[in-house]
Length: 217
Image 1 (cartoon, rainbow, N blue to C red):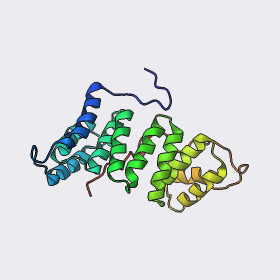
Image 2 (image 1 turned 90 degrees about the vertical axis):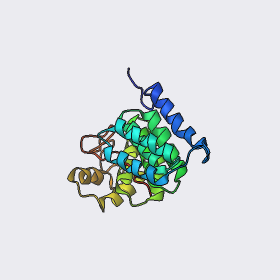
Image 3 (image 1 turned 30 degrees about the horizontal axis):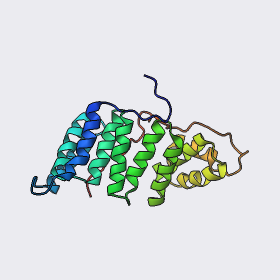
Image 4 (image 1 turned 135 degrees about the vertical axis):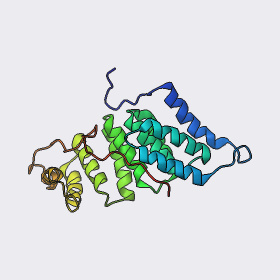
């Protein structure tokens, strides 16, 4: 089946049911189930260790973690990472949004939402989430580079891209990224060509950092 840019799809009925179960478990009362936060943290850490190689194993552990103690932001985030590894973009976006709602000051779920929407070609929404993440963590290199990459795809003015490229160049050591950022570090629109592909665009190239699992905090 051909997926149109920006289109989210359901991976399977089972995946949808798991998302629903993760949300509804929290409706149980403490009298009905004694919650165990320490167990949930241990299960989440085990799941994080399984990512990105074994997303199905991670999802089973994360469902147990959510049952043990509902609502941990790191658990929701890791559910999103697991689904993203499976190519289940809609389910990933739901989980990352739950993580962000549970921990609004954490930039990582917002960054992961940006990656999710960039991977399906919804560049305006990807840019919005990258911008939100960058406001919470202004010096995060991967977020600056991702936002610059999406701005290029959107055809944003060079004056919007140059400050990101200039700041990222102060941290970046990889030669291919230094070369790419240098092309956009000048604000003069005539100085360099536009729409030059970045070294790592969606879907992630081999060796590119994937959306990050989180340990509980």
